[in-house]
Amino acid sequence: METVKRRNTVVLLRSLILFSLFLLVWLFSMASFVKPRGPHSERRSCLANLKQMDGAKEQWALENKKPAGSPVVGHESEITKFLRGGDLPLCPDGGKYSLEPIGANPECSLDLPNHTL
Ligand SMILES: [Zn+2]
Image (cartoon, rainbow, N blue to C red; front, side, top):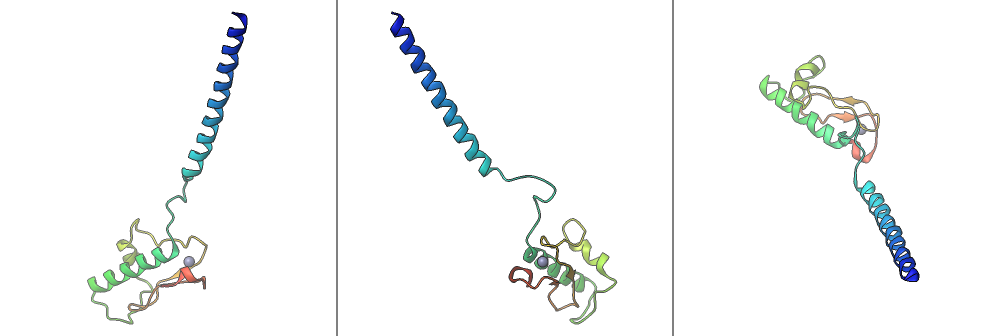
């Protein structure tokens, strides 16, 4: 009777250890799926920013009947009204944006493949 009890305890302990191991593995696998959330979790790619700014520029030009080649300097605050959030986006890698005249693509100061339209 005593040995049966001891065997039961050993089986119970083994299953507890196995269960906790599975739990640990599961927790670690879940942790790798969950993306970190923070103030920069919604940052967009530079290319997406450039496309958004180009769209905002074109909308502004249409609404204000600005022909191609019109400078946008001094009208940034009007153009940003067409942007989500109402502000010029920031390059995720620290580049500086220049809107460029109407008809020309906005540019990022970083000369990298994903930083040009
Ligand atoms: Zn950039």
